[in-house]
Image 1 (cartoon, chains in turn blue, brown):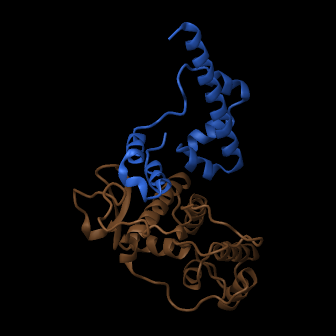
Image 2 (image 1 turned 120 degrees about the vertical axis):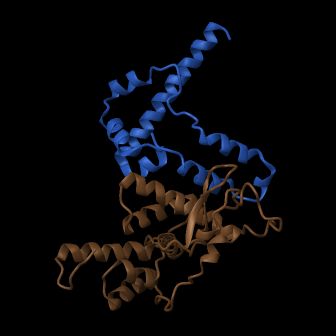
Length: 105
Length: 189
């Protein structure tokens, strides 16, 4: 990949990180209990995110990697999405079960 | 929760609000009796005002086997997974956990509410079923087990724990057809 394309991708990664953390922070401020469940994080992590200033958030986002990651559980989820069995059965239910049983950060 | 008949106004008000919240989510009298101390006549009044109907009398269905039928198992397992998340998040396992978890379950099935904030129609998996499920799990009649393929936790009979368990998604029963998952569960277009 060319250096230019690479840099563009990293820029997109950082933008996504920022959008994600902003959304997370909004969710936490609006309803912390629901946010913790939907984000798959602990109360402690939620408190920390809530306390971050915009400047701190931006600093945190300047990684070259995505902050919201596909965890190990998502391999099962993806596999179930592509197997034939999933024609008749609502995938939304299965994904809820798998995502809710993931360990929290 | 032990509130004496002459409870403080605030305590009584909390209990009352709890009953209102539960009725909006479709709770029947048996569940209300178990988790609030609001008097029977008051419960009936709140019920009539919110739903426009009299509460149905009689016991809730109490078969553990229902939770093992294909469609019920999917919903019950989803509800239970959400309940465990809420428990972990709040550190509590009480009626408030039941309510928060059930509300999250309702967003999953895209349930609708009317202008009074009451559920428009009874979902396939009602809050009464959720409450019964929790009692069965506490009473060790039902339990959860991990699917060996997808690793999700599913509701099973407490004495059926085996090492080859595969869930209904990874190993659907052979007689499964399109009609099993009817549109009534709020997940089909």
